[in-house]
Figure: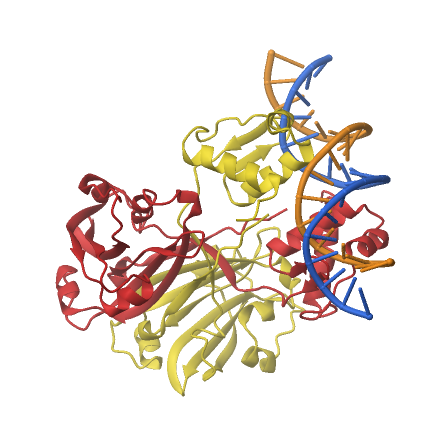
Length: 237
Length: 237
DNA sequence: TAGTGGTCTAGACCACTAG
DNA sequence: TAGTGGTCTAGACCACTAG
């Protein structure tokens, strides 16, 4: 067993104390200077330890006040989802069904926060594996003049890549919402499912750094082709 | 707009260069000292920027060699899953159906990596919302003598908490696997579903720090009660 | 005003890499 | 042997908190 760096040891020590309830939720931890004296290390080393705890959601810090314990984090997983690679299957293809400029429905006015008089781009795509339809993808982008939406791009790009025409891709925030539901009859028809058959819906929201919605939509997935896996949790240090 | 700290600016600058393909996959970045000279900052500040990029999966570093670009990460989401709170519903309850000491099936021998002659603890639970069965949970723990499994605990604890009798909870690694499937007839009966009806399966694997499996199992979920949401991505800095 | 976390510097020692 | 990333220190200035 290799000796861990001191800042990792300190982080683990405090982690354990939070797990054991020695530091309760929202209780004040000793200051960085105090911890430095306790562990006989410099303040920078303490900060490294606290940064790990911060990244892993064990504590939060408020400048001028101090660092506070959170509830020990559990049950969190990192998972990868891309509509262009639902099953890590090379046979997966996407076909553009249509691109329309439409008036927003009340749901779109609410979710995309668009003015009722403005327009919205609607992109409909069918996703197939071995020519069999497995998912129907319906995405919306607020229609700002100057957004270059090229059909070729829509055909071959993942939705987030289209949005990178609007904002830099590393500034896009994504939110995911997956749930079981029954799709509309016409979607069921496209997916060759019986009416009223259950499917899995993947709702995706894309926001810029100022939390302005820049894209939203749903992917309706044949439940037999639904599969997501968690990625190994990174050790942040 | 508040001016960002220098190390964040440097991180964003390098991020952008990776996004734009200026640094390609596995290509060597300038050394920390070189970057420090380029940006006119100390090496520690460069390291802070690179640590962010490391945590966010933009780069990897090899001591003695240097730091290298990865492919720009996309499509990653953090989500929370707990069998004790499938729908954030206070009416959710769990009921212990049974605890058995069983011989491992070939699947269990493989996944839990247990010796075929050893025994395995099998915990079966039913999860209800408003008295309606929504999920059937089947979990396995290798049977080591000295593992205190108390029925009361099983009744009220999440599975990971039971495992914390074996290893410290913050040392448990978790893996998640969610997919659509059809359950066995007897599970469908318990969940009051028609035979052959689709359900969502949540497969969970629990490992200790040395990657030894310490628990595994499946949760079969009525598709109408399936819902997971991503958490806002933390900014690691 | 004393204390807090956030940021940054200059300097040091280390194990490791690759010629 | 020169260069790399990993770790750690002592010291500094800052905006903010809360009495």
